[in-house]
Length: 310
Image (tube, rainbow, N blue to C red):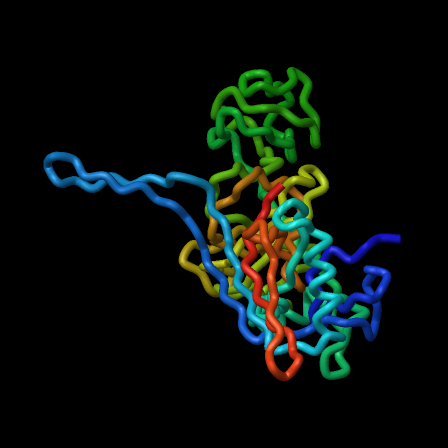
């Protein structure tokens, strides 16, 4: 039996066994505070020129306050937290303000097809991290690519590939190459990038919608199970609304997403981008846990949580 590892709330209720249970306990939040923490170092030269750089990795901090709770509401929550042994064991938290996208069309697109809102089931689509082919001459040294077209020739040894290359072969670029090499597609977006491309089969942005600035998402990457960072969208470019029009992926539209923070790890092609109920991996930001009981015999508790990437 798998114990529930999501902080109990009205959408993630828990039973006496510690397992997710329909009709179990899950108190709602009185308030939620989210802090984006990015330490930056500032220095000035003797001439007064400002030099800035990032001092450490980005993290989210979450503060949750509860209304006074009855013992029936309080004990399952308190027991869940005690089981995490202070900040020893990480768990997940669902932020109600970020459970669904702000775009009605996109929220329906990514909602599971078994889940209905207003009697309308979701489409159950899973947006994927997407990369488009690049022509020879634009390859980035050190980047891994997958060959997508060899009509310009099969000798790719000048860029680190085979002398008899074929479609879907992988190589790590040793040179930018020339336009004679037809096309190859990056297999991942490097960590540190502040924008990514998103798509899925038959995606059309005017039909399926797109994330909006302020939406949160996490990554489900079969090529990197340690990629557990929570990201926030800060800019969105679609094929119809853009500053720099995103390319097509075959016949499918793509949407370019700018994120905070930049990618903390490489994002591999085909990784799932989870916009429906993204869960933040956290730990309790303290070694002690306390509550109080007021004169109405109601329990009072609040939480301070810190993001915990793998």
